[in-house]
Image 1 (cartoon, helix red, strand yellow):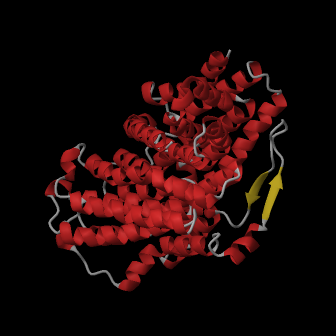
Image 2 (cartoon, rainbow, N blue to C red):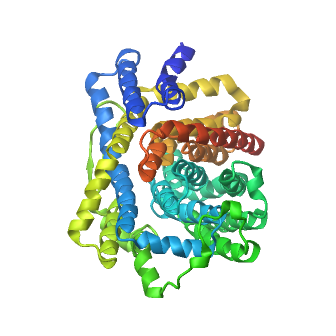
Image 3 (cartoon, one colour):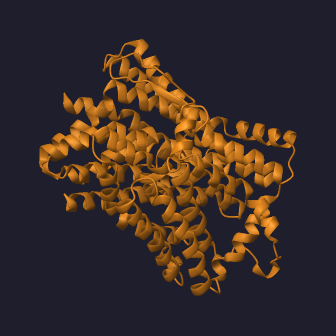
Length: 508
């Protein structure tokens, strides 16, 4: 009976893998069918009340729209507006003046700036904005999406000012500082490896590392070391932010020293036509991103009085009607999407765009992202229904029973499944954090270590989550490219999960 439960519970996930990678079906269609399949299974095999099934999906839809959909649309709108105002041309000139080498730019934008966006905002901004910027620099859209998905995997643990790890602490009853230290230690090998993989992706092989080893190593270590220190001595809130800022500065300096003459094979800009960019012009071009940084930092938990005041403007409502449900909260002001939108409008005005122009860009953005939003709605509806019906717990129970003392090897995989289904490292903590803690106690393993292994796996699963891929597709404005992106990303996801399993097992 347990195996049958496991097999049936896996059907929506198996369908998504087949539909996206094998059948090359557009994400919004594949995820819509997955939603229908999960509803049928929930009503028949798991005997859900129809009202409970409906409200479970509704809860997922509402969360997909606010805050996830809001922040994704805001991020892409910000990028599109910088294209409209030609500010992205200035940004491009500034970035290519650092280096015309595609590999260096990928490290600065996807790894460094992407890590910064994950630490400050999360909710897909770390994929949407860097991917859009890479495309704006002339890189292949599918490559841009894939390299940003790989880059975004490891910083997810401390995204949105540490929310996934803080949530894990709430779910398991453990101190978030202890979990942050444990998680950062587990992630060190993967965070060192990630920049090297990203550079290799630039040339479709290890040959791309030629002449880039010093810069890549500096980029990796300058992110990992501050991140690890922050996790151990400060907590879960700052690892991504401090690590990414140090990384961008050190990568630029390393490129100046070790990559003075870029390999022509990887050049994407002509440094010969450099124009001197005035400081005022540079500030104007970067204004939306500067404002995003300032507003997100000023309203984060790092500025407690402001955060507490603004967090009061929220609604908490019950949606799911069955057992195990809880109120969901909507923060109407202090949510990343609101601040990104505000930054975009102010930044656009500074860059010379009038309100009519900005609204036209917003309308086009919404039209272009309509299928992406449908995908995210379906994914979140499926995730909530699978969680409330018991499908997710049945999947996890099977893994625990089959693996026994070798369970740590698959602990990251369970976290990865949680993120694959929900698209959120935080949701994966909610789904499986308690299970990992209970299993650790049963097996006599340090609880924090196994709970952190769940977070490590959850980070990796984000690479191939349909929600993440939908965000990437929306950012590069290439509908129908989901299957190509998944086929590339899944290889790195499997590699990372194998390494994560070995790390979790060795530490346990």
